[in-house]
Image (cartoon, rainbow, N blue to C red; front, side, top):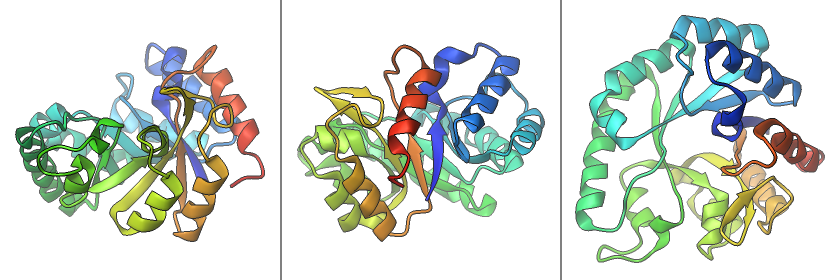
Amino acid sequence: MKLALQLYTIRDCYKNGEEFISALKKVKELGFDGVEFAGFAGLKADELKKALNEIGLVPLSSHESPERLRDNIDEILSYCDEIGCKNVVCAFSPAKTREDLQSLEKILKSAKEKARPFGINILYHNHSHEFEPMELGIPLDVIKGFCGLELDTYWVFNSKVNPAAYIRENAEKIGLIHLKDGKNGTPCAIGEGENSISEILDAAKECGFEWIIVENDNPVPDGIEDTRRSMKNLIGKY
């Protein structure tokens, strides 16, 4: 399997496009093969594509809000197509009511239809609230009925669900996997929390996933050093 980094993890390391490119170089130096975006630091698509090619990083996916997927989908798809990014992920959505899920379904189905000619996948990234029962059942069960998932393994674990078992049981519904650790509801570097990292990696291998995306929402003391520890703790496990 190959490793990518969700760049939200190192958001403290750049404030503009030039610093963003420097941060991408550090990500490559740490041993990552790809990246997942959470914004593009103001870079034009051709500028970012050139930097990625020179550095040697695959633009695996990009996180977007449901509002941008609704209002700016053409812009998103054009940008991602130009840089060669084949996955666009809805990063978060409310999922407490029937109306929440109906709105999300409308947005994601429309995005999927527009993404199809580009060969771009539309996925949904979970947190823990999608496992809280509601009138329609478990929200994530409803969501995976109309959209593929980017499974965040720490928020699955935090919901008292076994992440490795969930991967095996839902592999055909999962497009990408976020490998995340944490404890007491707070994310941390891989190997410093309570999540079953080795079991998750074993399940991902068994199910044929090519990529694993590392993320930490709460890096300490900063994104690069936190990511360095995650990579050190992953050596020999993937």
